[in-house]
Length: 393
Ligand SMILES: [Zn+2]
Image 1 (cartoon, rainbow, N blue to C red):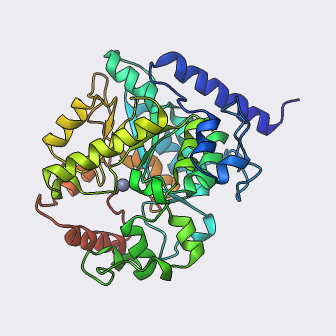
Image 2 (spheres, protein in one colour; image 1 turned 90 degrees about the vertical axis):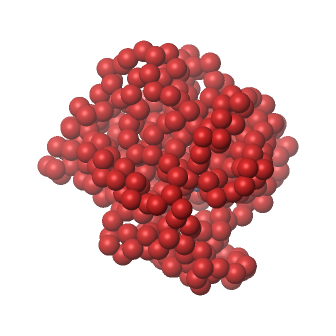
Image 3 (cartoon, rainbow, N blue to C red; image 1 turned 60 degrees about the vertical axis):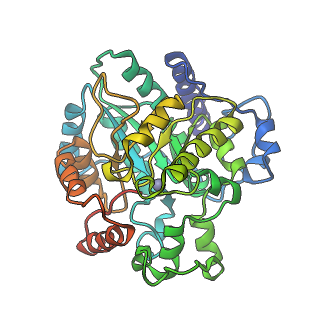
């Protein structure tokens, strides 16, 4: 008899085999030796050379692998899920996640609103699998490039900012569902495993701390943040990111230091984009490194950024512009649907139908092109106090 862990292993193996078969983008470009060489960390202890998929985060991970969710859904949730499957038929909807917090930390002032709980991630992946098929973004890019149409309802999962909690909290859930994700990391943070400035300010001052001018506008005193909170919010280090790649996840670049490209000078833009893509290419030993714009709305990047990415021949570029991707769409302008703590099951199922896409686009368009971080942070505070969603980062 095959136990649940063995089932999960088989699901992952089948998934990776399928990804390898359907795309020319390398699935695993690093070896366990590369990960060990990149530093000592959590990943080292749980690795056995020669096999990528036996790196199950069971021995060292502080969080148990959850059971697959298959609990009965409410009437409205089931209805929206049915519509979700119908509305996305023939489309590829890419989900935009950030970090995953412990279930008991939901509602803590230091948890960003664009996080989800581990329980919610489990339930959401189960909902997507009921409505359609969750594919690897590499398969999605290959499909878009081919120009073919498809009849299935397709989803792909991405995570921005690469917090270390993906290794401890998201990876077991993804493995349980046989899902491989795309993870966009800031390469300067991979060097030091530090916090993003916005997350550090929120940890110190609550949601108001995300405002650029108050109260955390000076140097960030990271030492004042509770060590446990700091550890929950910090970004992955290289060894942890490479361990995720060994599990079959696709690593991508998200600039070097999470810079809003439209507000940087041309030299800085080039350094942020080319520097991050090339750093990942060197470590992963492949040119197939995708890219995601920080903040990701239309006024957060420009045509020159896209031209540079095209010149670098990156295989895919993700924005945070809402919507689904149709056959023949440009893999260098991928739309994504942001998910956060504000997505209860019914709201999540409704969001996935695409019925809210037009509203999301209007919300993004209302932002003036010359808005600075302060205005955006003010809007986030306002949105959060209204109990609705905040914009993705
Ligand atoms: Zn980001």
